[in-house]
Image (cartoon, rainbow, N blue to C red; front, side, top):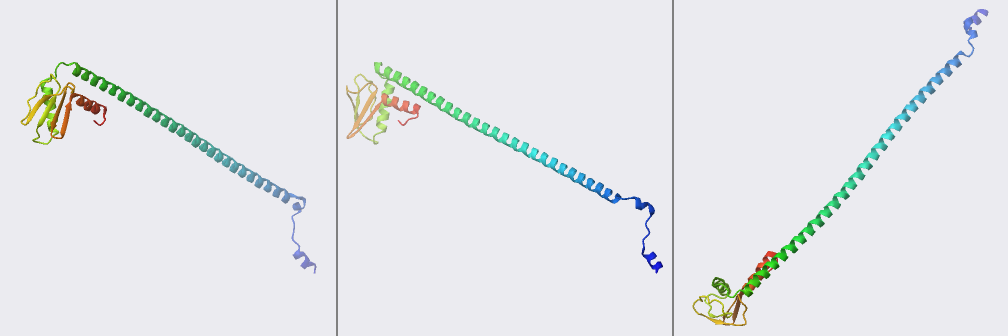
Length: 201
């Protein structure tokens, strides 16, 4: 009976009887190490997240800055374009007014010369005759009226010349039946002025 009990009893080294609390201390050290590792990992993750957030904030700030600069540049370009357009329109208006003034002055000078000229050149009267006859049907015949003192052109067959004191210098009037055509230097001046000013004659 005593032999069976001896076989079931585990032998314990004598020195182990004095190691009270050793397993608990080792477990505490293990826990401390795990806690430190977890804390380090959490700190690293937090630092990484903070750096990522800071980088995103800097990127967002840079993007906002770029958008602001772009908006300023766009507004500046639009303002400069509007200013240039206004300047161009002002210059165009000045040039147009200047051109119209020069045309008016030139026409006025030409008319004044015509008015004080004692006699219109024969070539001028002949060109007025051609202009008047070109506006009539081919083969028309009738009377050519000229102001007193005007050179007498050579009329085509079927036409005769008469004076009309109501006609101003530089004017020729052709009458064929019911058709009356007036050609004059004044009319030519008006057409010339309209062409130079870009207006319909």
